[in-house]
Image (cartoon, rainbow, N blue to C red; front, side, top):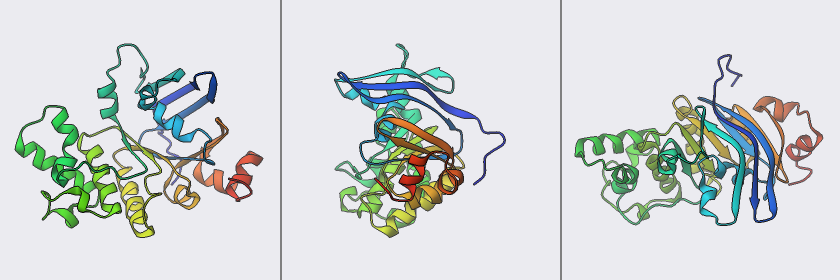
Amino acid sequence: MEDSKMAEPIITAKDVRLHYGEFEALHGINLEFNRGEITAMIGPSGCGKSTFLRCLNRMNDLIDTAKVTGDIRLDGQDIYAGDTDVVQLRKRVGMVFQQPVPFPFSIYENVIYGLRLAGVKDRAVLDAAVEKSLRQAALWDEVKDKLHDSALGLSGGQQQRVAIARVLAVEPEVILMDEPTSALDPISSTQIENMLLELREQYTIIIVTHNMHQASRISDRTAFFLQGNLIEYAPTKKIFMNPDKKETEDYISGRFG
């Protein structure tokens, strides 16, 4: 996966800081995410990568003590501007969490949950969205004959792909993923990695992962975080083969973390 000569940032973050009360958890992060690429964010537990990820669709707004400063723009628009429609933002910047979170109803209703919230009622539109997003999530063939069965009856890997299909159904521009395979077995993890490589043609994907092999296999660029700082950000091959910073080299080689 080489640098695109026409790389175009879809999200830019400048001097992003996050405080929980008096404590500063992120120390002036500067990052750009290019359209149509997979970016991996790596680093030890508690280094700020998931916290930063949640800044990109304002999920930290749900934490009373959290305060974000700096500048984050999606397609040039300030996502923290006073007139930002946060519901619309989270439709454009979807999120998949670490634990599969199926709602306690059918596979079909899980997938169209966001569309129903948006007021879509046309059955043909909903049917088409279900098939399209389940195909994109590499799950259609496994569940097409049991769409009206409970999603809770699926395996962990299948539940996570339903969660991904739910995000895809509302046609986001960016997909944020917080350790999406850490709770899954190796076969399910591989299925999701292969799916992400196909989805990257149509979406910008930003993934937090503890799995070095995963980051090196699927990402175009990698950002290494440590203690709330962005230490290094470069094409993935460079991060893994020839990092500039000693801290990056130590982490990649397993000396800490």
